[in-house]
Amino acid sequence: IGLFGMSEILNQVFELGVSNKKKMKVGRVVPDKKTLKRLVPTILRGSLIGTFIGALPGAGGPVAASIAYNTEKTNSKDPSKFGTGIPEGVAAAESANNAVTGGAIIPMLALAVPGDGTTAVLMSAFIIKGIDLGPMIFSQHPEVVNTTYIFLILGNIFMLILGLSLAKIFAKVIEVDNKILLPVVLLICMVGTFASASNTFNIYVMIFFGILGFVMQRFKFSLTPMILGLVLGSMAEENFRSALTMSQGDYGVFFRPISLVFIIIAAVILAYPRVKRAINKRKSADSNGSDAA
Image: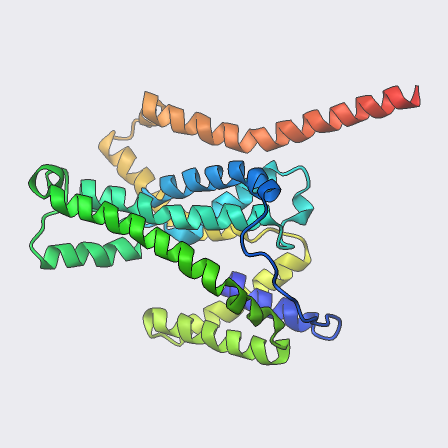
């Protein structure tokens, strides 16, 4: 909340004297065919990332949205456009965020481990009804599994209908004067932070990280890696220790076929954008040289 919410409030306050809000008329809600065709690869990538992150217990929507957005930004020909509201950025984050719901049901049904907060609530409802989750649920309670799938599909359909119907109303928020909007958003941030643990100290933490996020943005540092580090760092450390405990300190456990596949995938994802940029620079340099000749 501090890094993304509070820091953005400080950014808006800093620019309050220079930015003038203009009334915007929202036209089409559904993108045209050309834009939709361009967004198909982005939506597919975001959906895959969201499903995979959803299947990891504890990660949730914000992590999936951040990773999908960052992946799309690093693979973009013009990363500077991200953060200005371009369709690719919105499609990447939202498709990943929506896909998390389906992915989170995988560990809940198959392993009795909630993938996120929503599935944790759903899981408690199943337990109250005396339904044991785990591998046997598919043979013992197939009607529960089928009902879960059906309502998941219906939920997405209703979300689409509501989203298309109310998009123009939600967009009106942009027209609200910052002098009114920012204090309201700040109050919501403070209430949400306090409510997370009923602790006043959390508000001071939010303010500190809000100022830190504001300074980082001013010096052109990305906030997403820091968020991912805070969310996934403890999980990575805990699982790293568990793996070494089970393997009795043998680091070879990380180079077994399945582990090695994931390490290679991670390395390719990290290296691909940089290699692609280097190739593009070389091609442009070669074309400039041939034009000069």
